[in-house]
Amino acid sequence: MMQDVVAHVRSIIKRGDTRPVTSLSVGSTQIPYDTAHFSSLSPTNPCRTLFVDGGNAEVFSSPHLAVHFIRIYGAVYSGATRLSRHTTEGFAIIRLVHGATGFSYQTHLIGMSLAIPEISLTDMRLGSVSQNVMPQAVADVVRHCLEWQMIDQHACEAVVKDGALHDCPQDVYRTVSQNTVLQIGVSKTTTALTNTGVSAPYHLSGTCPPGSWVYAAHPTIGFAKLHPRATHVFRIDVKNGTLHQAASLLVPTCTDATFLGYPYGLLEADLRAAVTAREQRYLRHLFVAKYGTVQPLEQASDAHDMLNALH
Image (tube, rainbow, N blue to C red; front, side):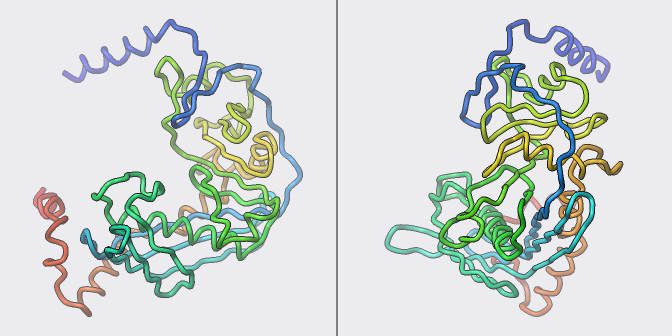
């Protein structure tokens, strides 16, 4: 049976799509495709650059109340030299409340100081405008806010974040939002497609120039191969600069054999910010030991976990 599966997949790849690629679809935006948008990369002069990432894990969760542990890590580099590193961590207690305009989530932070405004269920950052938003989505928004707080506290000439580059909330982070700090987002995964329905990075890898390169699909969104021997093409977002400037700044940091072509500062931030499964179990056990059983609170959402435990 597997042989038939493999044969069919190979036939799809070999046959491909004979239509010409004329555009790339990034989110809801259609961008014309043109090989003239490729440009080769070479290292640029280093500057003080902050690499930042965050991780969070559920301590317990129900649709109306949840506790998450959040960790934010940032490392300041100049080229390939790390100058400093910073960590902040604590707990977010997320509670569903009902007000004059409907349901929203309130967040209370312990161990971290930041006022998080109420987040409506219709907030587009939650990814779903419905009554079925779970606290996990709110915790992710809170984590992103805390990442921007760290960026605001450690002013550098450039900042590199994991994932797509979302707008900095100007009412809270004036240092970043009101100056010309070069902001770069590096996405490890992307759903961008060509007009023929093929993965954009896959197509670009077959039509690109040799060596390391950047493809400027849009003034603020592009794709880059950051080392000549890299096996991955990443989406790059930029603000307060050009895609070529951003990608060239990253090139000297993408030589680590652990993940050739991926910025080492982000690799470090990912490893340091991640909340491991072991940590999550410890925090849950600690919470239950002091609070007591949380099963009545979790019964609306834990049935799958109970079934998975039987496997």
